[in-house]
Length: 265
Ligand SMILES: O=C(O)CCC(=O)C(=O)O
Image 1 (cartoon, helix red, strand yellow):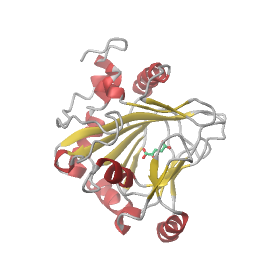
Image 2 (cartoon, rainbow, N blue to C red):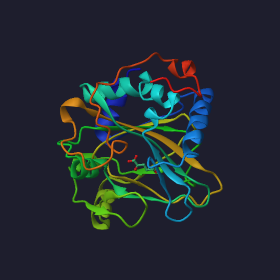
Image 3 (spheres, rainbow, N blue to C red):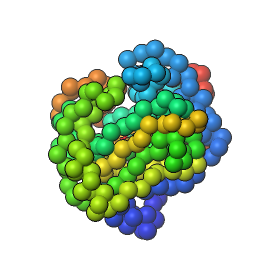
């Protein structure tokens, strides 16, 4: 799947794209079922909320599930990423972030490169984060908030926050966020299940807690150019995969060919 010239212009201007309903309800159902099985596991790849103990993020999914093994090679994700990056890409991180109804916790203001650079030694902010909404995401159940154009202001000062949530993250301070939002505004990335979000490594974003009665699950695939690979191995493989093989693209109907219970590789 190729992005149009308009979509490429929008990505360059805003730093993100929202592509509604790219995956069908049947495909989303397969992904939800696979995610549910992963969330039931007790393993180091599953990070739990500080408050409720519910799974907050489940990582390394393409190595744990045949459905996600295919999703990370899906042409509706990988082809636009290759088009934007103009390079061969490796699979850096694969996860589902969940926010349980009423108790799902926030993600602080940050840009991904601060963590990729400081923890993993990634040289340049060239990685792309590709999301698939697994639930309908509305203004109430903890959508991502993007600051349009913040990627054009360069990498902002960031500091490691190990306290606010269970997941250590390099975050941006309030003064910086205020300045960037005064300049560019803020957009809530909502849409029906199956919607795809694409954003770059220095786009400033966050997401609020989920106080609504609706759960919110989002799949995330981070692809990074092979030429821009990590230089440090501070974090475990599931937080930054070591395998630098360029990701191969499967057929458009690849999800339907996955056998749900059997992991093949
Ligand atoms: O799932 C969320 O709400 C936040 C995700 C995020 O910040 C990220 O993928 O970088």
